[in-house]
Length: 249
Image (cartoon, rainbow, N blue to C red; front, side, top):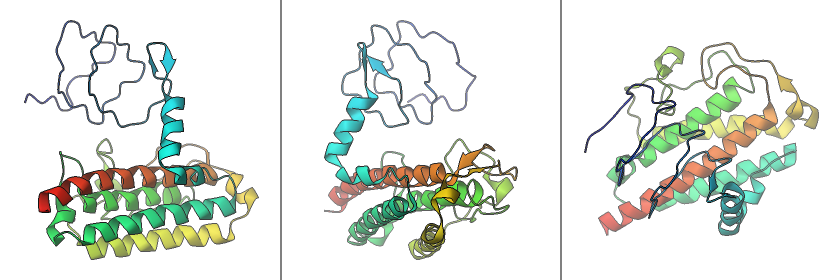
């Protein structure tokens, strides 16, 4: 398969009379793309999708409603108060504990195996550490050095080493879970005492190098990002665990 990785910027380009059948698009920005006369049979799309219209119908509300039907816990992942924020963290922890228990029934090597070039379970758990560090430690708490070295940023974050990420790290599952527990405990401690006023207060941008980019944000917005990202990645992890369970059956 031909691979195009970090090639020239294709913004505004036209692709006409081409076959992209069975192609894979990973970390690709398709914002404001226009597709006319396309064939899209048996495609599988995961990502941040808003404003997408297919044959004149906006897709997001339909997808969100169906996801809520299939996963009613999602209704608890839209916190607006300290109490509902604490409950949202409870939801994601229940999901992750169940997923880790599921993985424990497989050979130890399974947690380090990739499925279809996706992150392994170990890498996914390391990413959830990074997400808490980024959106709580960096964006909400405004700490100068919140990032744990074993955290795994998204692939488009290419300067992780500059703010403390060890790209050569190879922690054990036990080490990963211990760090993750620390991060969640830190977040819980904050939510245990935070007031509504503090949760809704707009923070100044954190200008220390890190992720996300500097911007004014409320702590509530940051918590919402954390719990929704955690939910999405536990779904990915369970999807790939199903493949591994078949492989080890």
